[in-house]
Length: 108
Image (cartoon, rainbow, N blue to C red; front, side, top):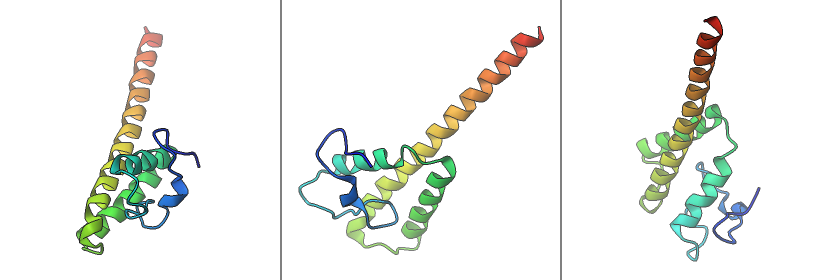
């Protein structure tokens, strides 16, 4: 794993809960640093892997399996996984559009 671009935070410090990051890993690290590290960690995940993590987070949020002080981090994490899934779908959609346009041009 790589270190976050914005700090000297080691992503291994974030291991722990279902979201991939421990929300209370250190009071000296900002929420933005945690977000940056999570984004780095999930950047290589497939759509299916991201969706699975998102589903786990949503189950925890819905079933109230988390403590109130961790709720914010779970909510933020879920949004980051959702954003990653949406970005992957956008890439695929663009590839399909390009294939369709190229097929149309070739058939003329």
